[in-house]
Length: 245
Image 1 (tube, rainbow, N blue to C red):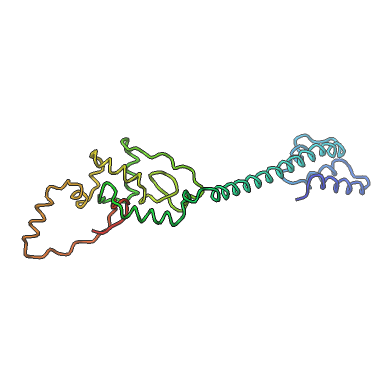
Image 2: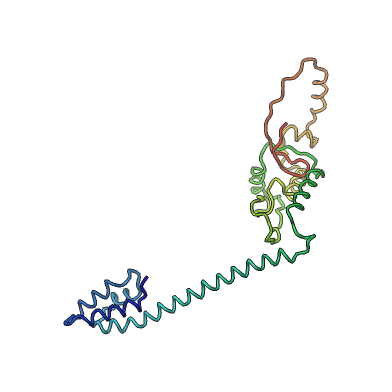
């Protein structure tokens, strides 16, 4: 857009070429040519200048103000760009300078994930009739839950994964070891048992009818109908996932 300095220069040249132009007409022409949000336009509307020369004299201060604001905006834009470049450079150096054994490469993460799946984690197996998200929603309403500390900053963290228990990125809720440990502790204290399925109650040793039912089924000659397959949320072998029973 045209600067105030350029407009005043063009306007002054135009009125100098018109003979017999009165101040009132010149003031209205000056005002109409200014931008709607112009501070100078607000000035001459609020404090009407007696002559066109007085209006042009006032314009000098607003020209300086406009140019100073533009200079500040340019400096701010340049500073933001420099800060952004510096931040990107720090992240590159951080990844490059870290010892190789500490770098959380994809292969290390994959090996760790496979190892966690093979290694049993206490509790060995609890089946819940609710999803991990529903479990988290229930935990948020309780005052006996020990919530984890904030994860340490890491530029290489996988932001595509989100943990509802940590309320942060880096891993999925179903893979959260802190959540599994907290659930195990809460089950030991008698909490969350109302969400266990019958299979989960048997695993946890809460079903006294389990052995009796196995004996009855073993004696019966008539085969039982095929079980209904349904999906449930479980914590199995160190991770919360959907399984079939």
